[in-house]
Length: 144
Image (cartoon, rainbow, N blue to C red; front, side, top):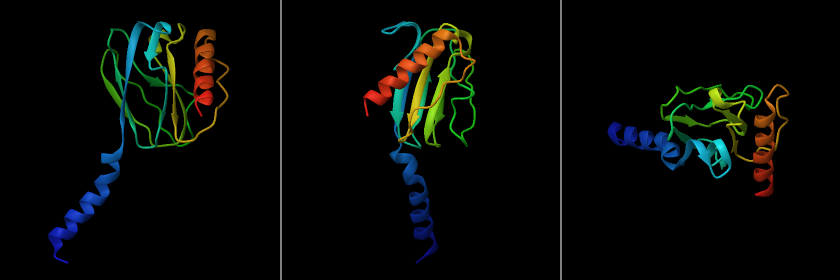
C-alpha cells in the first residue's frame, strides 16, 4: 500500500472516536427551574469521551471538580469565572461539579460517565450542596 493512503487511513482511524463523541451544554444560572444558583441541567449521564460545555449565562460562575467526588484516575479541573469552559470526561464514574463562589448556596451538579453507580458524598460539603447532590444522584438512579 502506498504511504499516503496508509497515512490517511491511520489518521481517520485515530480521529474517528473523537468525531463520535457528544457535546452537552450546561448553563450556569443565578435562578433556574430548581431555584437559585443552579446548573441547568443539574445532572447528566454521558459516555466516556463526551464533552460538557459550561456556559456562564449570568456572571459570577465557574465549573470545578469536587474533591472526593472524582473517579480514580480523573484529573481535577477548574474553569475561570465568567468564561465558557469545555471538559471532556474520559474516566467512567461519578463527577461532582461545583461553582466555587456559590458552593455554600448549593450550586452543584453531577455528571455520570458510563455505568457508574452512586457514591458516598464527602462529609465536608455544605448542607445545601450535600442535599442537592443527594437529590441529583437519586434522579440518576431513578432514570436507570
